[in-house]
Image (cartoon, rainbow, N blue to C red; front, side, top):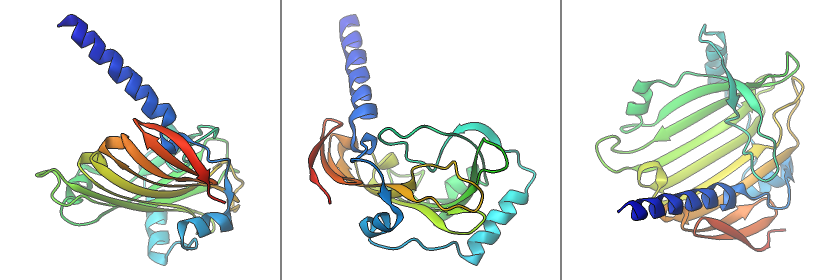
Length: 230
């Protein structure tokens, strides 16, 4: 029994390593793309924040809620050789909103800033989560978000996820575009982006998709290139 337990532990460690280092979302796809190319790949242009969104972000920024310091970035994808950026974050997420998302779409606003002084831009994100039936039944998941530069309202990222099972572990389809760097002077708009479009079955055992300039297949959590996307 002990040997079986050890074998199972080793197997899980190997699978975890494959998942963390080999899956499609960890690939660079040959490097980032321009803003116009990112919009073309996603199939729609970037859209600025609405007045309602701007007011929601401004309200969150004026609250007395403390910023959470030295957090990993929620906006930058961190794929390929991208540097993991530590940021400060604040959000109006709550336990009530988590439960609410099982019965109707629940919106959460968040803000993120790079810890490099006053020159760095602040990014605002609105995420909508809808998990029909949660927490009473094994749910369908839908999640979509938009990310904006606070000073200008320009959109610099968005994502969508649809899937089956808790956390989309049975099957899923995801699309996301994120800026390569968040370390920009106030009022600047990122010019380089990572674009990821992929699908998977059985928590990633089988899958396929695109990252920037390349198409990939995926088997046993390990991605392999299957052609150029240019």
